[in-house]
Length: 215
Image (cartoon, rainbow, N blue to C red; front, side, top):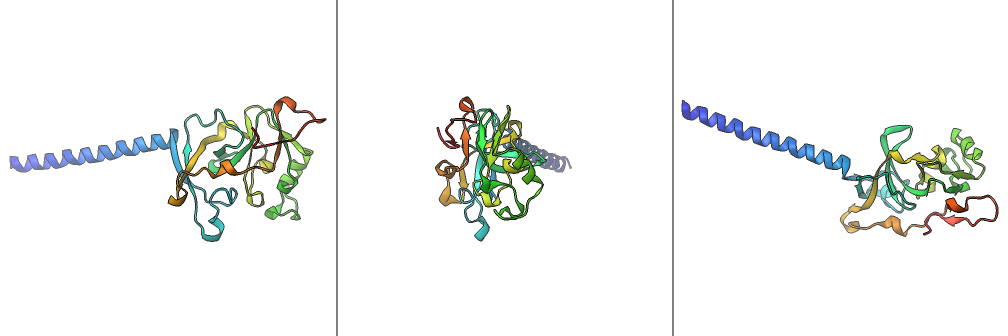
């Protein structure tokens, strides 16, 4: 009888080690995912062809690694960021940072909000807000202006205005899947057509419109 009790105790003790180890591992993984590194798929077309170039044709998605440590600091033009959608912070989006606080965006007419994202599509509620900027939008302190690389399929700052930097959850590190694209940073080769005025020359007369991706 004592042998049987020892065996039962041994099984229970082993089970406890397995369960507690698994829970610790899950907790550690969750902590890392929330605070240091996350891998997620780019499932929409707003960043094509830079990211997930075949998503509309085949459904194939790029999976990116995100640096989540202090993600909302040192945000620079050209960074690809993961952020909480202002109207639905529980949901996330992926866009490119076009301008940072103090800079002025020269609005691109192609990106004016319209139903169906087409140049000749009917106006939507956001069209009036875009028109009210009168061609230029200055980024307020603590905010950034974000856009998708695919203007035909992107709801971004042209629709909802600059986003708070505090909403930024991560900055793109590299593609991790598919394997043939592992380690690539394709966003570094993309040059935005949206023009930006640097903060120190933000005037309406005799200024040069600078590329958002310029140095």
